[in-house]
Length: 576
DNA sequence: GCCGTTTTCGGCCCGACTGTTTTCAGTCG
View 1 (cartoon, helix red, strand yellow):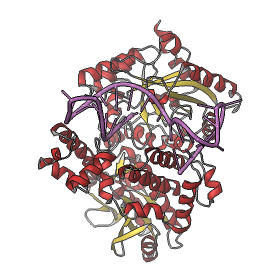
View 2 (spheres, chains in turn cyan, red):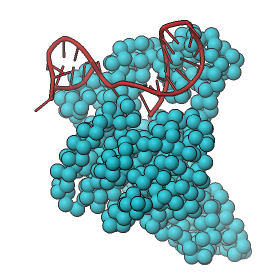
View 3 (cartoon, chains in turn purple, red):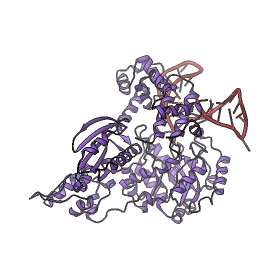
View 4 (cartoon, helix red, strand yellow):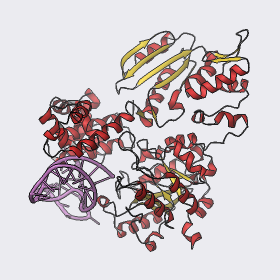
């Protein structure tokens, strides 16, 4: 379960969607959307706030505050329940399909009686879509493609929601007196970009109190199964959680086993067999006499196989065992190695927090440098102007001494146009300390065009970092079609870093692409792309991608000391 | 529904793209 702020954000967003679907006032719907974002990005936990306190959140007025308060005290919002009764949940769910908005969702429901994504796919295949005015064959194809996209990531949970839930469960189980150890394992521990379910491992003499604690959690909606060693539940958010309890002396072997990956485990077991041993979740045994050799810690298990401990993000059988045998495991970059954030927004464009709030929160993270990179004018809806940007720079310079240990950088997130050019002329660009350049339009351009535009952006002497390169949004929008190797080669040649965007909705680039880019000699920037102060914590997810891609501090420009980063950012000077 | 160094009423992020129109509606960022 995520923060209460996130729960309320989801409810307000649902209310806004339902207002849109039922043809309510568009501005009213947008007011709730804005309030939803504001609550989600609010740094203070709303639990315990009263109506007055809630109204202090920008974008939350009396009406919204009362609805939130109603939820906080009674667990439901009457107005939301009323409108929910009108529109089946599946109709709203159709809005998550690219190409389907509130108007089409309603038309599909009213005209064809379609009330779920599955029924929608069925109707398109049965060629019934053209019965709805304004929808034809092409629309059907696009929508069907969108449905495919959702299904590909279907049922998987984003890393932030999974991490928040796992942290809470581990905390709850650790508090049980009988519990001696508890941690999460599985793909979450390996920091995969999404997780299918959450695996929790615990040790106790008597497992019953732990099983009981899990099934009694307030957000446990359904107990799928429960026994002495394993209990599975589903949360109110539909996430499956498996808890396994083992004796304390088997902790290490069980943790290896339940962390995976399957391919990594198979390789370990094969090594064990060759050495006359047998590895299972219960320990490492002598194959002959069945005597247990070790299983108390992961270190011991790996050591008994002649290996150093291998960090979970590497356990994918991508050569980590061979590297470990050669003593060539990388010293992975860690969250604590990050010395700054080079891609963040403020309320000057679409961020929620002020410049001061963002800077103060960044300083609290102990950064040595911090860049503010608000959107550039070609993203028209942000209404950026030269004057606004220069005024922000002025304001930033005035705040220079606010945190003595943290250097402030003035930057921007440029838009890479269809031809690869960016918003401002060279003269204006040279006034920025750092420029991120990203694709925000023309996602459908063909492979050659996408490749050309990105290479041209790399060749721009003022562009230091390519932001969220593939522009994918997990489960919502696929990556653009681009020759990644050609772009990586251009980035390496021109000294342009490629971003690992840490937003859990993006995580762009993906780990396997980062691996490929690294082979080209590309450097990376692990950034939050924060639009609110809590988002500044996102690099914990981007670090997962970086670790899965074997990156060290050498590969990551914002893990470098300022003087070294400064030289990297003098790309334009070095090239002239 | 929210908000006010333009405002307590009257605005509210604006334009491109797409497919379906034959002048525009819906969706998206």
